[in-house]
Amino acid sequence: MKTIADLHIHSKYARATSSNCDLEGLSHWAKIKGIGIVSTGDITHPTWFNELKAKLSNSETGLYNYKDTLFCLGGEVSLIYNIQESTKKMHIALLFPSFEIASQFNDEIKKFGNLKEDGRPMLHIQPSEFADIVKNSSKNSFIMLAHVWTPWFSIFGSKSGVNSIEEAFGDRSNSIDGLETGLSSDPKMNWMLSSLDNYPLLSNSDAHSPQKLGREANLFDLKELTYQALTNAIKTKKGFLKTYEFYPEEGKYHFDGHRNCNVLLSPEESEKINNLCPVCRKKLTIGVMHRIFDLADRKEGQKPKNAVPFSYLVPLTILLSKVLKKGENTLSVQEEYFKLTRYFGSEFNVYESSFEELKKITSLEIAKAIDKVNKGNIYWIPGYDGVFGELQFEKTTKQIKNQKNLLDY
Image (cartoon, rainbow, N blue to C red):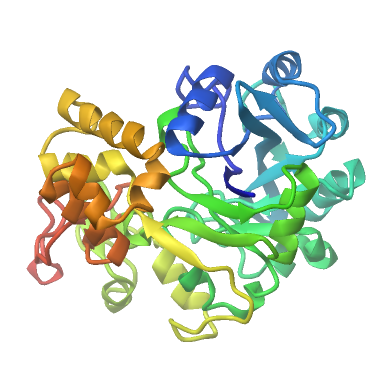
């Protein structure tokens, strides 16, 4: 049976998250989005762990039901570690097959950090030792390196990352079960590194509010809805149909730049000025595209054997906001959003619908906009240094507001 899974999210117990990131809110919005399996997020937080255990149904499948939404026990940790006297930082997302195994894992890692402080705890531990703890809890515990290209807090990040998985994990590299591409890259960009060919590429929302669920996700065709079937599909790529991707230009670290200086640059432009901001002369925040180009050993467009397909989408409220020229949270945008999701059954179903079907329920302008997204006929002012990219329906020379051309400096 086909199901969409979002396997990296956060609860209300993580920093900078919505108070609605509880089981009620997550289950409610999973249905609106069309998501069948959601990570609980923050399984390491003691209060959230106890709340989950009390409210989720008993399960022999490893997936837990709450109001007809299936939850997979999962979380994220922030590793702080040293390599040759250099401090590195990396986020790792995790999945566990049972409360008992998650509890055993939590008992082991609490000596490395304060689990009560944040839903995504900071742990001072070497990656290889951490991988051993995860796999010692159960061989079926799942390790996914999170948003692997984000400048901060990722394995390959330009600010504190390394150049290979082996550099961080050594002979425990085979413990890694999957890589999360993150919002600022897509599988095609990751295919430029042959060293990643053996790792499944996943896409998840990393949502900090329920409304952001499914902005990236994974589509599976599983023989049965169990934890084992889900993780086996990822590892073997059998039944792993595709990932749903942000256009990477929409991600807030796609290009290089300086947010405070209103400087947005392509990798080529940055290289010409030695990666220094032309305004403040400090080092630019090097984005995902630049970092991938630095490490790539293939040309863009080469596809590895047995690669999982993907398709792009734009969060529907962002598209409607652009078409209606109103804010995402305005009444007109919200009314149109719920009209479409009610009619088609979910947000994902909206994007899977034909242009002819769309015209029956919404304006021609909105139907054309959705059709453009599905066909890839849209453009972006790329995101950079924490600023999300801006959707454009026509080609434009416009740059970020108040952004000057490089030649103006």
